[in-house]
Amino acid sequence: MIKRNLLYVLTFAALTACSHKKKEEEQTNGPYQPNWESMKDHDATAEWFKDAKFGIYAHWGVLSVPAYANDWYARLMHVEGSDENKYHVETYGQPSEFGYHDFVPMFKAENFDAHEWANLYVQAGAKFGGIVAEHHDGWANWDSKINPWNAKSMGPHRDLVGELEKAIHSRGLKFVTSFHMARNLQINKDNPDKWLDDESYFPYNPDMPTSSEDPKLAKLYGNIPKKQFYREWLGQLVEVIDNYSPDLIYFDGKLSKLPDTLKAQFSAYYLNHAAKEGKQVIITHKEGELPKSVSIEDFEKGRANQITKEFWLTDETVSVGSWSYTNDLQLKTANDIVDILADIVSKNGALMLNISPMANGTIPQNQKDILITIGKWLKVNGEAIYGTRTWEVFGEGPTKQEKSGMFLDKLDYTAQDVRYTKKDNVIYAIVLGWPGEGTPVTLQSFTKETLGEKIPQVEAVSVLGSDEKINFNIDDTGLHFTTPKQKVDDKAFVLKIVTK
Image 1 (cartoon, rainbow, N blue to C red):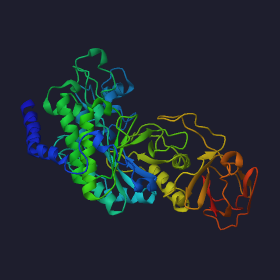
Image 2 (image 1 turned 180 degrees about the horizontal axis):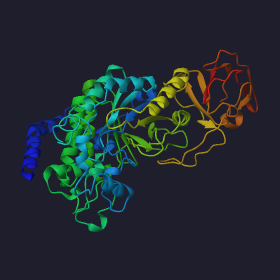
Image 3 (image 1 turned 30 degrees about the horizontal axis):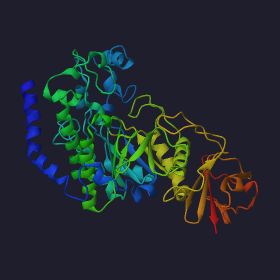
Image 4 (image 1 turned 180 degrees about the vertical axis):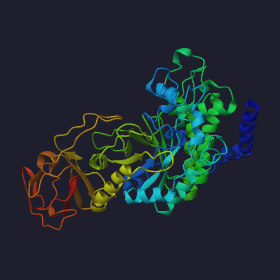
């Protein structure tokens, strides 16, 4: 078995060896060289991205098969005494007997329909969409010539990324691939005290496959030399760039494990590729792991608490817990997500919402219902989101976000909370709840106390989704109007304020 797996890995290496030197040469073929100084004047934000505001991607792959606990099952099944480990032993046997790699044949994706997914993304109002290309678990969802653990060679025997890319781009959306694989590299093999340190996704354990010296298994579990990991990390990104031309590449954390020279090589290659194609692309980072000259910051399950100069991204999930599908997955409401979207856009950000398909490729109906409801809201109110920019203030109301950052506690917004956006001579006030029919409302930001001498001259006011005439007046205490006599929405509604 070891000889056969070694031959398998060497075959993959041979297929790419000749092209590797060519790719290194191509990294310098364009306006950018593989160093940060060369890219210091690059504009990391694309106009299409600042206009798009809302996108969708999916945590899906072999990690979806156990459908238990959360997307860290693949790691925690190897942590003795954990709930995941107990469940795994009871259900499948000891990890030494049934390893994570044994889930691969069970990931068949038999119900996956890329066009159905893309249509749902469109129906939800997303302007960009995609998929996790490779998670922490070392599984590649594309037809890789570098990583033998890929969806074309194993499991579904389909190029999942390729199918979705065609479906997404054919509908005029921008395409997203996310990479979480930096955490896959095991770095504490020689330090037993840190075998359970989650800086490496798979814990090293001499009694489990995670410590296997078999070349093929070692590749999946990240138990390989750093130089090999670095080379293959870059090579896999180049594969995806060349074959699928993503418009946005999202990186999860732990890029700090990689040398700066490697990250600069990737950035130059991607930006030069985009330059050849005449398009703008987006790279994301977390917590300063890439320079802002080439990437924008991502706040996982968080956001800024004020308007920022730099544009940014929040990645949030439709679920309350796991990013990948589980049998007891609890979900947010469409109302929660609309409020989060409005808050993000008002502060100069965009939202990328994660969904959690089942291992067979089915997107559960309760998740579909949420996306469709968001899409219906955006069909009425999208002009307050798409193509907008920030106003003088982001909002007002009693619900306060005390700090900026990732993994923030849930906020429950009220009908007294308002978020503002702007487009040309129109200000949009997104009221994050329905205060009642025929109810007086005051927008307190339209005062000298807030705006100084910048109070706009208002010519007309209307409510999106309502034909009723909206009377208004402005005095020292703000802009006053009365809500329509017929309810517009149980969720947020939008006041369109046309200024002179």
